[in-house]
Image (cartoon, rainbow, N blue to C red; front, side, top):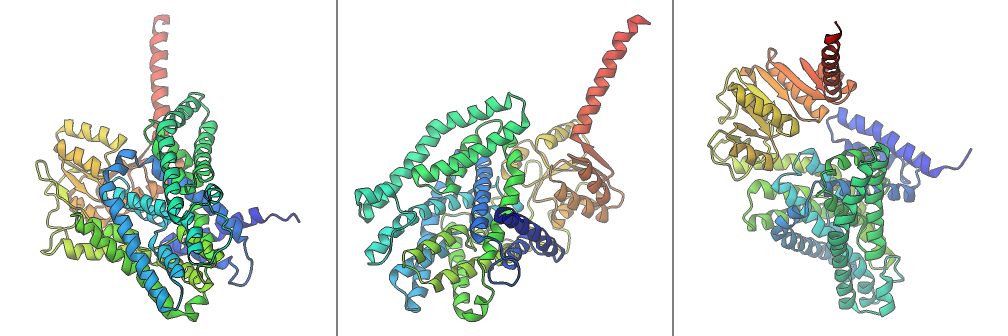
Amino acid sequence: MHHTPLIATIVAGLGLAFVFGALAHRLRLPPLVGYLLAGVAVGPFTPGYVADQALATELAELGVILLMFGVGLHFSLKDLLSVRAIALPGAVVQIAVATLMGLGLALLLGWTVGAGLVFGMALSVASTVVLLRAIQERRLMETERGRIAVGWLIVEDLAMVIALVLLPALAGMFGVGSNSPVADPLASYLDLGFSGVLLLTLVKVGVFVGFMLVVGRRVIPWILHYIAHTGSRELFRLAVLAIALTVAFGAAKLFGVSLALGAFFAGMILSESPLSQRAAQESLPLRDAFAVLFFVSMGMLFDPASLLREPWLLLATLFIIIVGKSVAAFLIVLAFRHPVGTALTISASLAQIGEFSFILAELGVKLNLLPTAGRDLILAGAILSIMLNPLVFAAVDWLARRLERPSGESAVSISHPGAEAPTARVAAPEASSDPPDATQLTGHTILVGHGRVGSIVADALQKSRRPFLIIEDADNVVAKLRDSNFETIVGNAARSDVLKSANLGAARYLLIAIPGTFEAGQIVQQARAANPGIQIIARAHSDAEVEHLKNMGADLIIMGEREIALGIIRQLLAWQGRDAAPLG
């Protein structure tokens, strides 16, 4: 039999991730918990098959690259600059606070100051994959709090890039260290000191950003437009992946920038192109698959026995990750006069650590700065904090309701024509009764989503002069709806409290214009249970999606491709009939 560690790692990783992910979903746990447990199952610390850990880590890095590229496609330079006033100082202060807390714990354990600094920095930076997954699952990417969280993450990534370059110099200051595999060759050749290395790193990052803004902004969109005009979907998909991977790899090799940061800038530059939406769709399947391998690779690093060896040290580490830096981020966001809901979302998003923490820990051990016990604590803290992060978000939802509804007001905001826009919005937890600000409409139509499809439907409903309202959760879209005097409920329609606010029981029609089939299925299922007589129309993109929505209870499912085909046939028959008439 051929020795195929790469194939075996992919098969074992994805196969077990599917099994454990499905089990986690069955138990109403986030699927990523199952992915982590799949990694533990194929890791070196449990009996049975052991996957190639080095290969799994490299495959996971591909997932981070594609994920950050996708985020960049939805995050313009304007968005990044719009949150710089809070993201830059906020991230820097939060990193400093978490690093000092980690340093304090390290000194209590008798470690050196250098070990404490590495340990603290590793605890200060959130996981790119986990943070972005959490934001995307809650559909916060287009909201102000989502932009702040991503901007905060980018600043953290930049700080860690600088830290990785400076660690060899830091090791030299403390009289330890060795030849670093990531040391800057130019800095070594010039024999720069600590301040010189810092200045060189900032210059290289600045040159990379300038290069992307000047050259990348012209070249990347031009390449995609050229390929799009060839009409080959295969070439277009290949071009998207080639751009993401090439820019990320080139950024790391030529400018010393992290792979994730390079991919993010490539996506952000491409976001200005009209083809950005199509590029995001084409890269989505591979992005999801490799993101799963990332979680599996992290699970492989975890030794379950560490939970029993040093439980109190692990609890102290978790306290810094989940409580310490989250409270710091919460207070920082409030200090910048942002709403409590935004502060809670940012603090919950940062209440975990991930890939950069592993890289820092591994380099710290190689440089003899960090003891192996510190690396084990960082790994265990990362795994547990990621597994606990959904619970942190659940606690944030509960706390947001308590803090923002002191007098029993609903956390689901509703906009009536002419009403003043609220200053904050937090998706509320499950409500046991109808919110007091629910719509007063009856016999009305509920339209879910105001994108390309929903906006056309909304215009038609407005012309019909029949009562209707719109459910939407993207802040920029909500602002436009309010300007147009549409009655709008702000929130995720898959949540039961949002549907209650739409007075679902008294509605006649439900139109689901969002493209997400699984989310649409949840809406259909809840609507059918709450109002058996309501007529439901949904959209789909395949026969399987049509079948799924029918099983959930939808009356009519419109499949875009089928309707286009029927439209072509109707027009052809009309032409044929007109041309044939003179012959009769």
